[in-house]
Length: 452
Ligand code: XLS
Ligand code: NI
Ligand code: NI
Image (cartoon, rainbow, N blue to C red):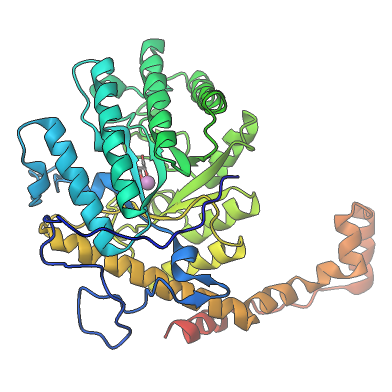
């Protein structure tokens, strides 16, 4: 797989005007700092277990929420003050937005970004013109990347916003719409390749159904697999070596999304022989919507060797939709980093802040506070996770809990050397099993011992 080391970035901070409050780069000032525009925990160069924090965490800024988000909600208009979104000409707006994006990422000190095709280039009156817009913005982005050293973590196509996709993209009842989606994937994949992208994501925006009354579920899943195979074939054709990901989400915008959670995605990938070609891009708020913890989703993916990348955000426990907030909980970041460390670290993936500032946080500087908080929470989570694993008591407890399965009797069961007759015989000879405490509270205290 395509693995790029994280390079120290020689960020060029000249001619940067959209974030005058921050002269940048955001400094690391340590725990005691009262400066809201400084890191308390994220020290990019600090080494933990042979790797720097920057190498472990591989932070990415997402283009859509951070630079294109308006603050619009179902009850009211956008609220965001965005000087880069003012020009009358859509292509000028696109270039201004990209100037703002690279200024922001440079000042923040992240090494990666992620985008959808129509985040960076406006969709136009024809597919051919939209493609021209995309090509022009890819050239612009390419210069910005060269200037700053910032790399593309992954690219993707927006196959859910335009009305043509109201009944899905790959899973649409009309092959003409499927063709449109395929053409968009082709161009987005080529854009990703041109920018040296390390990955390409499929989030099934409207690949699901609103009602089964009008839906051929079997056919739609097959169509979805077909598009993935066509993308894999095209990647081979053009020599794209990046990692493909599928991003689970159970609902929203549709009532039921086919990639509903990690286990459903695994089943889908196995069913259509795609397991060697895609990994999972897991998002915390999607796990929550699926009724799972992020830890559960990550553990499932890790065990199947498909833990690829993370969309780092969080939901609001009191609101039942994808609020995509910035992650600040140390329990959450610790759990995520335990799984990342246990898989041996990210290779192609990273932590992409697929998160948006709240509607009332409308000033550009709020974007800095949000990302600084998320990065600090993950840096501390990394330290805590590392310490818990180094300490070893948690893993020891689990190992000891299952130790009997390593006895001759346990092994023979699992090696298919025992029958139900043997089990009955065992019970008749040994009687009632001894019960052992699961020690949940003790283990919760153990985790807190490292967080506090
Ligand atoms: C939406 C998804 C989306 C993907 C990229 O809920 O999280 O932002 O990450 O298409
Ligand atoms: Ni999401
Ligand atoms: Ni996402």
